[in-house]
Image 1: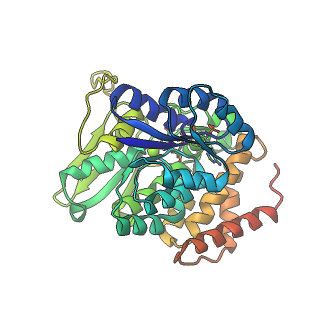
Image 2 (image 1 turned 30 degrees about the vertical axis):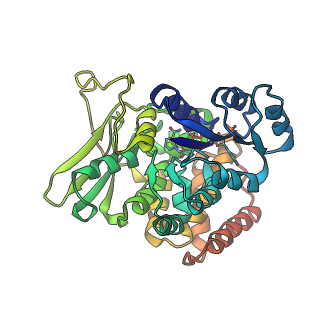
Length: 382
Ligand code: NDP
Ligand code: MG
């Protein structure tokens, strides 16, 4: 198996390489990309010897070119990232990029006939209709890395899509579970970055704190499993042992369980339908014997209801939401805006944006341009 990994220096990227190292000894790495962490990328290039490497600019390219032992083809710039997704000799692309940067490479890889192991949920939130249509046309498999979607996918071995009554998408509740709205409103990025169960990149960790992550996952699940929004229930399950469930029309429920360890869904996305033996830690149900479920406190997490609204309306609205969320999370991470300004910005935009159907990529580009102008026209300082 030949694999290319976009976002190799990130949380999912590094764990994917760990999976390759420990569980897939015959896999070859065809291409790797980094972004700001070039010092993290260099040893990976030395270890895995990809034929192609992507870095953002010439300065980073010269660092990689200076590595003595390997001479990979080095690409730069946005076009380079698209080229590497399409032109490496990998059969499968692991998309572990964060944010909207993931969309264009995914489309390019599908067009080039590569299967996709998808961590980058923003791809499906922004352009799920286009991505899934293209994948069907090109007979491409998109296998989910997101733990909830991997769980749903595994539970679907217990029945067919037409026998699904509902999907139960579980959420940890994030670091602010049980906090009052007043306390949450004073939270800084450093508070929001303390996720109780998962160690992840900064953007998704903030999305988990606002519960936007669950909203993005709702839209991701709708596209991956061809389900209407009403068939997907969101339940908070603070222990993160049940990664999601599927209830079938006979009333039977399949649940997928495991420790919160992203290497499991990453490995399954690469090995399915086979299972590969690992020595990863196992769940001890006698220790994890307090498994609970509750409904999300929607008043404290307005990003979730905004995402549910975007999921219901569809068209270009999720792309606008995704763009504004990504921008606002970036501002929050720098302590430039407050926690609830993330949802305020999106809510204000929803109040004036005219949603359009998504016919082509151009509709997404126009929607994101609208979001850029919207941000430019406002003062969003605390
Ligand atoms: P990280 O921030 O840890 O990693 C992101 C990767 O993308 C890094 O390699 C980074 O490079 C690179 N990158 C960032 N911006 C750009 C850009 N503009 N162009 C090209 N490359 C870029 O994120 P995660 O690994 O946490 O998340 C990746 C995706 O997986 C997200 O969509 C997230 O929602 C999803 N996901 C993550 C989970 C997790 O456990 N982490 C769980 C489920 C889903 P560098 O580091 O060199 O700057
Ligand atoms: Mg998830």
